[in-house]
Image (tube, rainbow, N blue to C red; front, side, top):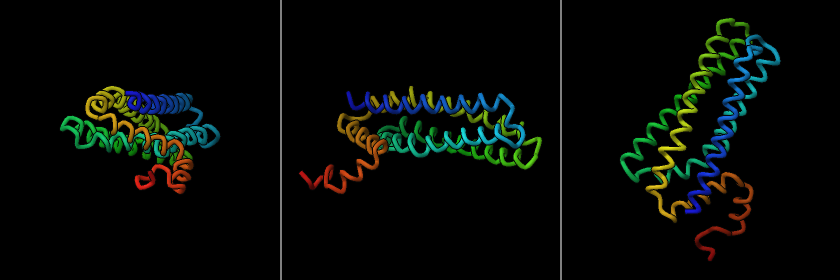
Length: 181
């Protein structure tokens, strides 16, 4: 199914970018220049914000159509989705805690840097595990359960997430609406 291959190629490209950003954060954190207020701290914060921005503004909207199409298709798929959603909430909480610890470092709290480093390491491990689940178990579930028509809908939704301005123009011109045939 070409649509399934296209969808997973896009999602895997996102996963590669997420892994890159997480690796950049780990590299910056291991350098130690961020443990005091200054340019190193600002750089680490900027990397974390880039990760959050890409994940929330780009990756998650693309994945939401896929998850919606899969939801309710099988008990195994629903359990996997629930597990992944719970993990995602935990991942977000860890990253928010790390950002709070960075603020404490900036205010001079010496202990906060060690706590932040631990939180970032935990976040990295959890997100890498989550991405592996998406690439293996979620991929297998979607390929097994979704129809050609559902894949076409998923790819259409992903393209809307990639090109929101084009989708808005097409919608305003009546393209893509069911009544405009």
